[in-house]
View 1: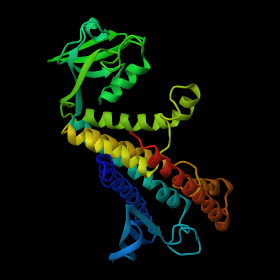
View 2 (view 1 turned 30 degrees about the vertical axis):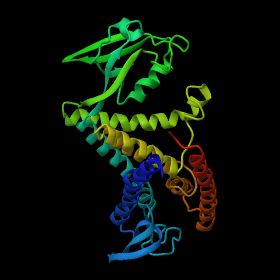
View 3 (view 1 turned 90 degrees about the vertical axis):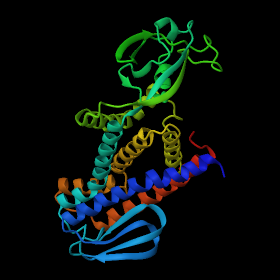
View 4 (view 1 turned 120 degrees about the vertical axis):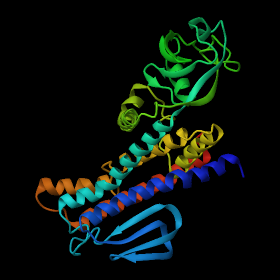
Length: 354
């Protein structure tokens, strides 16, 4: 059994399970606040392994498939059931349906805040080729990358990605040298001007050193947390236009399944353990939480966003769409989503994300 597989399993339980559980807790508490009866809150997916407790008419169960959890409100699709979800007001239904994504966004804000308070890994220069762009620009061993083109260097992948995108063009680096911050400009080499088996476009050797904290400043960490959540949402919205313009390749924008997410989370967990730094895994937890919340708000049948669309249409039309028709739309949507998920799982197994 390979170590990458074990890290993926660990990433699944450490990252994906809590994120899904928080999403369902958002729905649960919103339903309770709106006096909507919840028949069952399950830890994991059915089949049921055991009944943990029953409180206020809600069965709390433990289930065999360890994938977060689920909420089963009464009368989810039947407005004739008193105290059920479908019988609630439009405002209550909108609130309950959007609360899962809201809980994910709140979780991401908190996790990002903790991550920035603890500090990001510092990408440090350990060697410099005097004839390369880095040497010509004056970089020295011991310098720490803070920003590149106004983007925080949270890890070496951020640095490498922006350098590759700007090969042959001038970039601006914000470096820390001792107690001093220096702004340095240079032009990364293009392919053919260096031997990639020996060094990269800048001509530096890198390592991950002690963390670069935000002075443990709660307000600054909160600001960076909110900015990070917004950047993820903004980037996700821009993906189609970026694909059309050629800014990113289809491979870089490929959708992933629960298997792919576990692979990514496992890699982040491994990096955190190897570097004795929690930032990579916390950063990934927050990122996936935002992605899950945003995806669930998309106007796709069977997802929360698809159900919200029907609530909005009801408000516009002044009358409800027949529950049978809405239910059929969600059933078809679920079948399509399940088929797509099977294809994505197959892709992530055959072509793992590394």
